[in-house]
Length: 292
Length: 289
Image (cartoon, rainbow over all chains, first blue to last red; front, side):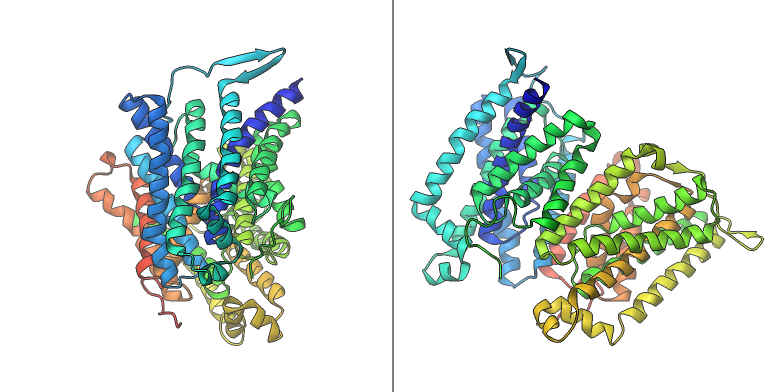
């Protein structure tokens, strides 16, 4: 029974990682930027939610909407103000990564200075829970399940059936060819950043109600997301989602045998093992996307 | 006066770390996010050998250097053949695993409480005392690191490393064993970091995990890029600026300010602005297109 309970907890955590991982992978596949500052965008969403819902007392739905919109705006601004100028100057791979790391560090410290380092809670007391036999399911578990089941099919429809969605996939598949076909890459990059960042706004809305908001929450989750994307396989969005799910389950099932102190070692050990023995991830390159 | 010595020692330690990280980032194009871990491995090796095993300081210092180099060689062999972004992630992972192991392997590392009571080094009958003696001791070792670094990156190694940095495929076509060369460079930098870790253990005589975390690593990256890559002057300028900078807050009353976070915010902003407007750093050479 403990096993099943841990599996449920793991699936819920994994679905959240999947939401984040898909947003990050969308940006990475489309722009080839290792967007570490994605973690800062995520945390920003958490504080927007906190200010709107707790400080200003707005309705929860409005606060979530605000968080999603403003994370999308912040992600798009990072692309326009930082990444685009670097790309135009043909900045090296390292320049992009350092700029991204700089953004992450800057925002994390800024949040700590503005809101303090303590956890800001969204609500009093624990989440409502439901008992099913011997198992305990929280409201978060249910919500995460519903959101994942709504968002992922919608995203798939957008990417396969709409003009912009197809353009995004074309860009991820072959950037040069995409330009030849007349796709306005600058505009598309902004759209990709806005979409990917908006997904992190949704993910943080779910997490914040359970765990509250802390300045460094984005940094820790960012590292997990990177592992999830690698474990799933780079280059294909569903494999990033699957990677997130696998990682969440692995993280929680490890509690079955190991103390929680070793969770990070399990997760990053999985990363190192995958990088060394199967860098293409569990699901491989299902698309023929390879970096030159 | 003691405080001035302290600042100088801290600058020297960071110069040693910056120059070894620049060997990776600047000279060879290896973007390592694991440098703070090798630094920590050196410090913990020193602390465990001198305090728990009762070793003399010199063999402990040599062991720390070798340990840094050995672990770096092993990690390098496993990860250096990976492509750019994958390697970065692997080293992030390695850094976090090292931190977690230090925190949780309590019988060896004393977990979050750290290790205290590290003995002072002694040369013959003279114990290296605080103040000038320690400063000279650390300055001598740092000078050794700078010297070895300088000799190493001189011709003919220089052109080899720069070929690898510019284009690995071309370097291979020129007959350079790219992975092997990178492993050697990585092990050397790991050894430097281990040696510096040994110095910090002897200097502070107390170590805990907080000195070797990701924020240290971000600070080191900031130092490399603020000073400018591939420049010994840059590897001195970066640490001087970033070590002396927080001292400003002493004069404006530090109680009212959350200094660590102000520092972090400024480092972050500085890194972004540097990349946008002056990627070669304060003292670095202009890059040729």
